[in-house]
Length: 341
Image (cartoon, rainbow, N blue to C red; front, side):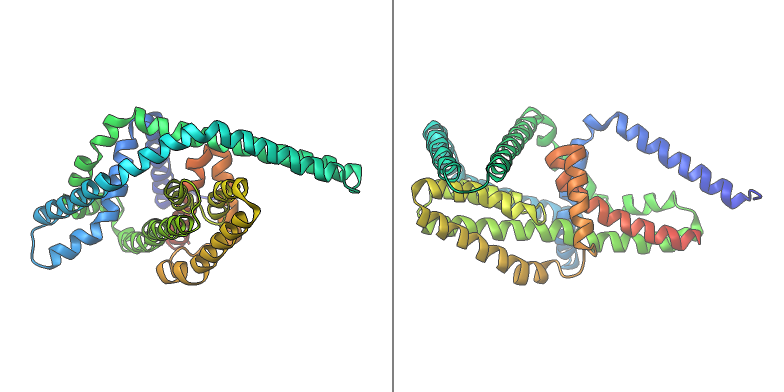
């Protein structure tokens, strides 16, 4: 096959892209403030554009939005942070007792089925399954704790993200226009369409999922508080955060609530299980379709595959970013085929 100028340009562009990706991989540990700031700017940009459409300058719109957000955070923090700290302190004090009761409950359940008429091979299989669940739960808790400690250790980088986000927001259009200058002229129209499709996808995956997570967290906390389950606020926050993980997040978030309720009484555990089931059904049939619509455009099997792949490669962070990366990758592949065919 004879090489043409088109093929050479494509090869050069591909090699340049690989070089840029390799460079970012080398400096990846210092990129997290910029990534968080870019995400924050992306989330806030629609509100800034709305205020700008009302006649405000972009800079003033950003400042007003920042003042409103920080006021909400300060007011909400003044109310919620003491409650969360009190619950955390209480949870730390109750943890040895909870672990002891959990161990007693585990051995009680184990003794019941060990003395039952189940075949020996089935009892062994159940034991292995329980041990595997325990190991996975401990691994998940360890990764979650490491992630939280990592955020605390990178406090300075996180603290400057609002400043970086301000610059991203202020120069959003200029950055976008300059970025498009690197694209060959005859590709720019398709590139603009690709950016529009990516925005539509990320609007569902990021903005939509965060909105759903907040709603789920409020519903879970309210329901657990009604049933007088201990640490309702902490469990609700955890359930909301974990709900960002499609399919499995709801199950993982329900586990500690049902476990704590089971330590109180089987009836309470049944009520909590029904509560999570109802919330999950509301989310799947009403909340998610209204907020997400068809924006993501990924088959459930694809979502599950990239959840497992992301979790295997990068743990919890991989599970969180696996689906957005897959959705964006699908858009890029679709538009790349249009350009190259």
